[in-house]
Image (cartoon, rainbow, N blue to C red; front, side, top):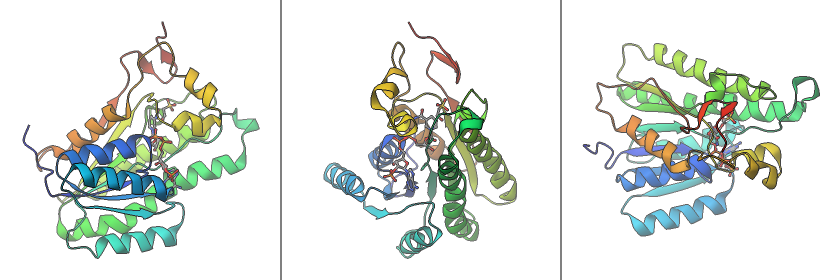
Length: 256
Ligand code: NDP
Ligand code: 8X3
């Protein structure tokens, strides 16, 4: 496949773990320059050192909490000052926090998910998308989820945020009508990252969720993101939903 990502400039949020970290490595392998954001700066710096050692690409990291508008604004301003425009924004930062039926839900967990998955994605997009419109070029790839297509017991507010991400992907796309700016989502099913550890706050319980079948790896999702970004400019993948072969809905997982 033709590599159209060489020397492109990619901003990935939530790049300190899981999908974001794998997405960063996968774009670097194509020769793309990186802007990596997350709260854990030490992890970003380790990833930066690793990528810069193994490839010729430029990597910039910034400590950003996407829930904080001022931090997002300052970080975006630093990115937009560089010589190259942002070609691809990957809105990946996100989480599930808690796993309770709605009547027992923790309101702080709800706010964390809404502030991160929904408002954070909006803050980042609002900073970067205008520069794409001005150039009449660019690509926003939102990381949604199968949780944005099917609700499941105790998924409630996390489901709602991912349904909202799906709605926003579609909304952004129609608002970009008449421009060359592409809007896509990559919507994965069960993947063994730190996601369930963060959600359940219990490593052992989290690990059990991935027993008895082959879940997605972060690299599988990164490959999908790179594929979506690498399509020719006249092609826009609107949604790419990928699940483990053993998973047919969030709750239908064939465990042996
Ligand atoms: P991980 O927990 O492994 O990684 C989450 C990343 O998001 C981390 O880099 C974390 O960095 C970052 N993040 C979380 N909150 C913030 C914040 N406030 N500001 C900036 N960065 C933040 O999970 P995944 O890689 O699995 O999740 C990535 C995305 O994929 C999420 O949107 C998730 O909802 C989605 N997803 C996950 C699936 C799965 O099964 N794993 C399936 C489908 C979708 P830090 O803590 O350093 O800030
Ligand atoms: C994460 C996948 O099925 O746990 O978005 O909601 S799921």
